[in-house]
Length: 129
Image (cartoon, rainbow, N blue to C red; front, side):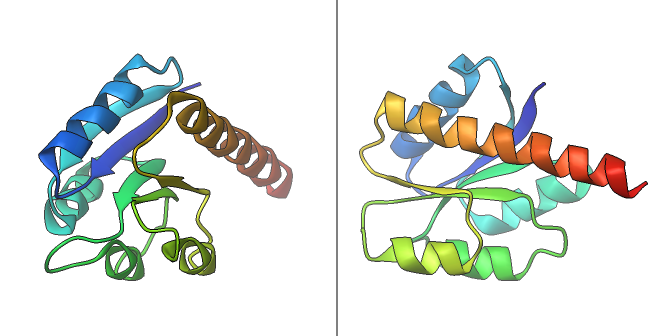
């Protein structure tokens, strides 16, 4: 099973780091990486996205505002350098929260959580039908 992912971060260096982590992970498929929420949103109208790696602090549209504006909400792993965003991230039903600089073990733990949740939702969905 693979989750389709997008990376949204206004820092090109951070985007490269996260995109590389995604590409190296056997259960993730990188659909695209974007420097702003508008590009990411456009991509998500065309592609199925299961998981977003999302920077909180971005110019114009913050990560939180971006999530507010989505009709279908995929899983979100927030990425930020500031710990005080963690509580707010949970208000947004975030799958997880990664603090910069990102550590591989922590990244893998987040992805495992996302995969487990994805499977759980699929099972529940199947039972409903």
